Image 1 (cartoon, rainbow, N blue to C red):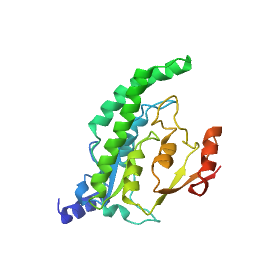
Image 2: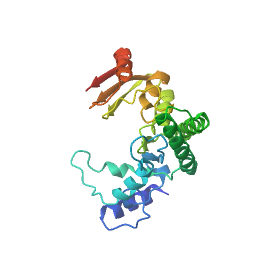
Image 3: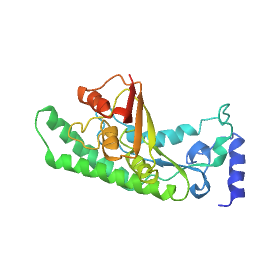
Amino acid sequence: MTKSSLIEKLKVLEEGLPCTPESGFLGTDLDPEECSLILVPVPWEATTSYGGGTSQGPKAIMKASHQLDLEDSSFGKSYRAGIAFIEPNSEIAALNSTAKEAAQEVIAAVSERNSSPENLAIVNQAGLRVNEIVNEEVEHWLAKGKFVAVVGGDHSSPQGLIEALSKRYTEGFGILHFDAHHDLRSEYEGFKFSHASIFYNVMHEFKNVSKIVQVGIRDYSRDEKNFMIQLKERGHCFY
C-alpha cells in the first residue's frame, strides 16, 4: 500500500458511511506497514477466576469500533497516523482452549483442597507460551519503529509487551495502572501467569520498569499490600 492509498482510505473513512462487519478497526482496512500504531489482539482467558468471555474482548472492541465517530476535541485527527488491528495469532486461541479446560480442573481440585499437577503444568506452560508469542509480535513491530498496544481482556495479556519494552528502554519507564486490584500475587490458584499475578511478575522480573503507579485499588490481599510497600520508590498506590 502506498502513502496516497492510505490517505484515500482515511478520506473514505471520514465520510462516515456504514461499513461491512468484516471491516477492520474503525471500519476501514489499513496496511499495518503504513500505520503508526499497531494493535495486537490477545484472545486469552485461561486463568479467569470470575465469569468469562475476556478472550472475546479484542473481537468485541473491533466490532464496537465500527460505531465510533471520529471527532475528538482533545486529540484532533490522531487516527490519521494510521491504526491497524493485526490478525490474531491462531496459536493463542488454541492454547486458550486447551488451557482453559485444564484450568477448570485445577480450580475444582483447589476448591476441594486437592491438587492437579498435570493440568497446572498445562496452564502454566500455555501462559508462558502466550507471553512469548506476544513478545515476539511486539518486538517485530517495535523494530519497524511502530507504537504497539496490546488489546485483550485478561489482565495477564500485556506481560509480553512489557517485556519487550523493558528490553528496549534500558533507561527505565513507568506503568500507570487503573484497577480495583493490585494484581501483585506471586501466583493465584497455582497459576504463575494468572491475571492476578501480572504486576508481581513484571516488577519481579523486569528491572527496567522503574515505577508502577496504581490507581483505584480497593480489593487486595495482605501479601499484595506488603509487596507494594517493599517496592519502595518503585511503587506507589492510590487506594
